[in-house]
Amino acid sequence: MRALLYMILAAFMLSILTTPLVEVFIAGKDKILLSSTVGNSYRTAREASYSYIDMRNVNAVMDEKGFLRCFAGTFATSYAMECTNPTANPLRFTSRDDAYNDITVYVDFSYELADSGADITVVKVTAESEYKFRTRYMRMISYGDTHPYLLSSTNTFTMRVTN
Image 1 (cartoon, rainbow, N blue to C red):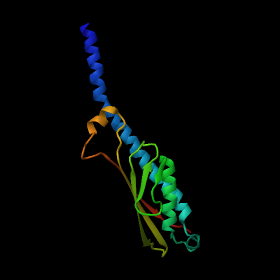
Image 2 (spheres, rainbow, N blue to C red):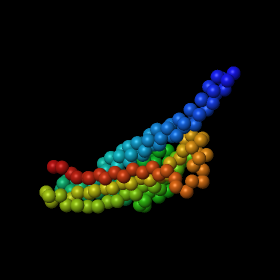
Image 3 (cartoon, helix red, strand yellow):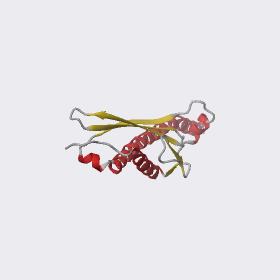
Image 4 (spheres, rainbow, N blue to C red):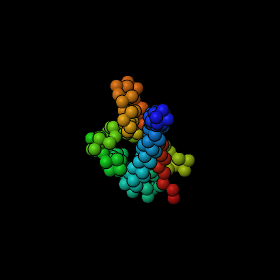
């Protein structure tokens, strides 16, 4: 009988010890998902927002509002979220099914001149969100916490047209 009690106690203690480890793996998965979604949304928006007249002159000039609109649409579709204002910077996304906390995406455009004389656009995208804990124990521990775990992804992309 004592051995059965020790086995139940060991199973209970093991579940308490493995819960944070499982949550770390889930948080890592969500960080990878956020980073890859930013990259995929950028690639889609890049192709849709090039100014074709400037591309003919080998300049990477783009329509910023069109870029933000296309980026917001792709990002919202991949996360099943809604963008509150798809042409304003920063972009704010709210979850339709409450699976994720709100995500804020900052997009910064800067323009440079290459050695060849062509225009280059540098786009810096930063996505931030408070992490929503998935396991019951971690939600109980983090309830009322003043320092939430922040998921963030910062990517810098260079847009250039090669001849």
